Image (cartoon, rainbow, N blue to C red; front, side):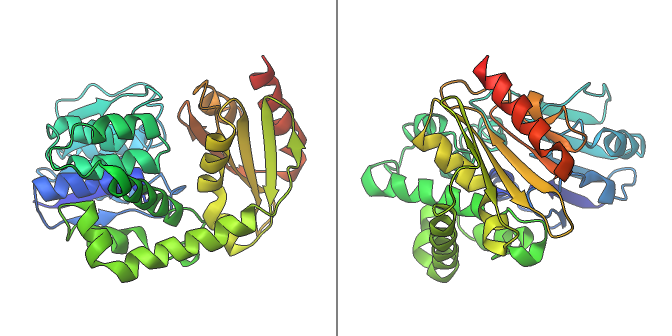
Length: 323
């Protein structure tokens, strides 16, 4: 019997898996990648009796592989908050799916574990830019870690871990997600990671600060009261910051939708969309109108937007939120 942990390489996926493996330590195969690498389940060569955990990747984008794995006789625990499409009805599948805009996979795992490692769920929620949800969870912490500056540190850690997941290739990241998981899992409390693994924490922090400073120097490509678009260059810093910069803009201008569009080496664009914080809906609906688009209501993206479709995307994006 083999174990597989299949997870998104962003903060939500990492913090969800950290909770599960702290609660149920076991050695298995880690399958992950950069945040946009979500067709991960196809990498699993499952056999009868195998156990597979899938975290924070769209079931809709992995359905064919999921059915194959289930039919092989493997058991699957699938936890996610993205658009799932039709959920297979199968005796080997346990699906914990919730697409409400104020939840994330780390929160769903926290509920599954009855809050056993809740501090990590707080970090994951902050990483997914769910500040209100994170603070509601933090208020339930028994150890007082939600007080004052310590809560701010959990928030920053979530942002930094999420930032680390962006980029089209592992070489763009400060830490490969599997490597970062192996660093996080050593600490039952994220504050211990911050305090005791200062080298890793400060590498994430300094990278984030440098890249965000560079992004702040870019003027809007398109800007109206209800929507704004920023186009970033084909640079490693821009690829790393594309998602968290959208979150930062959303926090600064909660009434406005944002799209951060990054030039790609091979041509075309990578698109990251954030719905307004005051109206967390529509991002997935917009992005699914384009062939490689998907995501969730509050945050979604397009992996490959051809140059000739840029103006069309901006029109769709702007008109949706103008309405």
